[in-house]
Image (cartoon, rainbow, N blue to C red; front, side, top):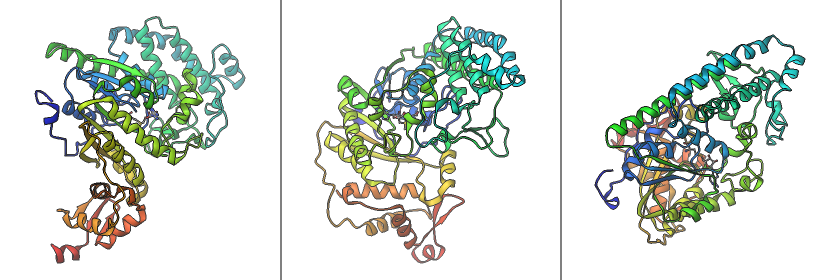
Length: 507
Ligand SMILES: C[S@@+](CC[C@H](N)C(=O)[O-])C[C@H]1O[C@@H](n2cnc3c(N)ncnc32)[C@H](O)[C@@H]1O
């Protein structure tokens, strides 16, 4: 956005193809859950905010929103209750500091001190490795979540992995320069994801290609035949990725300096969103956020792998504030729906008037959409766009797992804060799902349709018809209705196709 006024902005209506891997500052530095594609986030930030604006993500995760805002001369504001999330985002931001040559020197020194010792671990007996490990500080042996395959933290590692990680950590702690040290710690933390017994090699590919069950099935599943990757090589690759990310960040900032000047700023908070809104009420120019989707991922439970060893375990109070269904504390769905609505209100309270808010969401449960849309209207924000983001590789990977019953990709709902609360009915009687679907399907101007688009259109039709609160539809009902209207699911292409005879009869 350049000179136009905020109220003159025309909302983004088209899907932006996701580019997940091209930015070294996000891809390959440190894994996190459901990282949003940086190019999509960046385009939303550029469209809905101006330079020097305060751009917030209250559910910031690995920090994509705040980092992209920072690099686009805004004040990027990161918030998350998960210490791991803030460790990653602050770690990436700090790569803007210090000289890259110092980082490279720190890695060379680590290599001199660690590589051969780590390789020698392979030759030592269990007893010798245990004796070696005694010289270093080990993480607390905390209890893991109930659904983990092993009961305690240290059981997540072989004794060799524990020794290697403890020795590396000890060596990193002795680096003197602040920013190279932080960068190496970020790389060490990223290596934790590969150097533990939840790591599963991808079939038919190099041993090192694969990932932790934490990110694939969202649980601490210990591999039947764990693969032990070489610790130095695993760490070094991560450290090189971190240094490549620094080179990229330096380049972006240098380019800005030489062209329109550099003024990016970064702020970080570690608050439950409700408390954040008390501090940032009316102070934010744009929000792009991606709240947790119900019970899919228990972020805090799954981050114990890192938070425990980083010494940043969240308190019970923080864990109770997590916006999820289930998890080790068995948080209820009704509390989730209530707090999801309150989170949206908190977002709108933090926004200045006449500013924009984008919320990324996707779920089969229409009550979750009801909570978001109703709460936004009551807090004085008007829904101006709902754009599906589907079709990329991650989307098809998810689709392969369960075909038409899986909703993958996301819907980006964008609101404009008018400041005028709207009382929108949600329980209108007589909303006919079958008729609404018939209308949506008959309007389709193609013979190919994506389930996500259809479902999202149904939700919006119910919302506009003031009936979202009474829209109760299951996955199966939805699938049956689409089939009854003459559409067939193409499992290979993950979309619905209109039957030939229907096309011939009705054009
Ligand atoms: C879907 S993730 C965001 C991922 C992010 N879009 C990214 O690109 O990395 C949702 C985040 O919300 C955080 N969270 C959950 N409950 C919260 C709360 N009550 N207040 C603040 N953050 C919370 C989780 O720790 C998690 O990192």
